[in-house]
Length: 241
Ligand code: MGP
Image 1: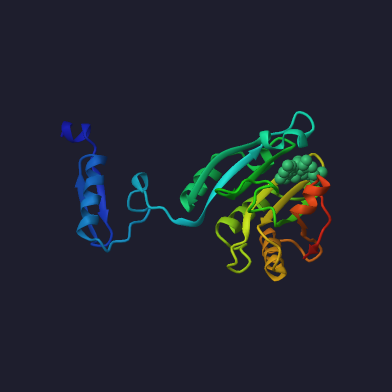
Image 2: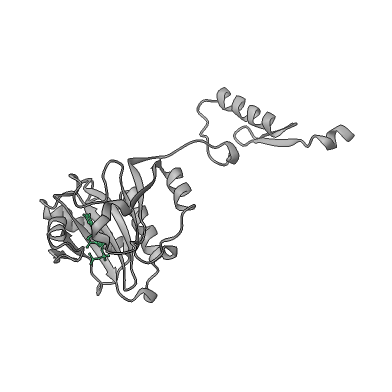
């Protein structure tokens, strides 16, 4: 009896067979579960089988890299590239949540900083050759108190990695940016090319829907060439939806 108390038993439930068996330790429980899996290769393994040893990953279509721009001490344009820091890459749903749940929320970032989530291999810059012929849709909000920036950013993240914002399968979204400034928040969706206006417009509409904007609110599209030549992200709007 004393032995039984010193070594707590674990109950393993085989839901499919409707059986319950007792084993002595967590390690034995894992082994028992592995044996039952190999006995039935058709069995679908889910997180409910063994949460602490669950290793199944649901792949994303693209691998994504999170970047962070730390606040510039003075004039950002002089050393834009130096301020851009690569944080981490991921390519599965599970890793996405692992990253999201362990970084500060957009609302917790200091003023003059940015999050950038871009396809791995694409730098979040106008100059990158996969961005240079494109542009960005942007939603800018001056009244910061009136918006839930964390919700807007999460919706945009999910719409991007989950491909709700993809121009109906045209695969043109290179990345997204959350811009935290004293006077405004801005969320942008960067597109690789604007040669097909229908695709660009569809991405804008999908982005707007993700943000759950009203009919009286708009997102604007500007080209990276215009931004680079004016030296400002506030280049003239070419489209609005
Ligand atoms: P920003 O951070 O995108 O917008 O650009 P912000 O702070 O709202 O300011 P705005 O006045 O430009 O709207 C801030 C500055 O960073 C720009 O004016 C550029 O000098 C620089 N910058 C931003 N981006 C995205 C790039 C880029 O891709 N390449 C280079 N070289 N500089 C950039």
